[in-house]
Image (cartoon, rainbow, N blue to C red; front, side, top):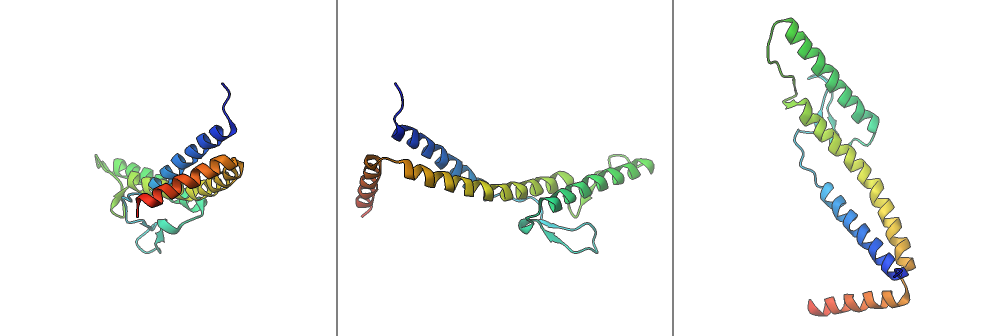
Length: 146
């Protein structure tokens, strides 16, 4: 049996609801590093939390990769075994994880806008009967909470 328009709208609204819940969860990341990134002790720090330029985030990862490789190569050259590069108190993987979380947060903002637009368009497609049913359910829930 073919689905009604309201059934399709309800399914899509449920999908949007689930995606918004995932976004809310991702908006509260557990940062590992101080998120105060600097390339050297004498350079100014960049707060990863506020970086919105993806090129800057890419540059940080490139710096970390390059420095780690060069430092570990130098340690081998000097005969130092088991050298692990630590940048400003954190491993390269820890820095990369926080930078990736920041990139995810930047992308979340765009997804939120898209979901809100979809939600608005879906609401316009609801039949008067479905809108009435939703209103009754909301009123019933309000009465239960009094």
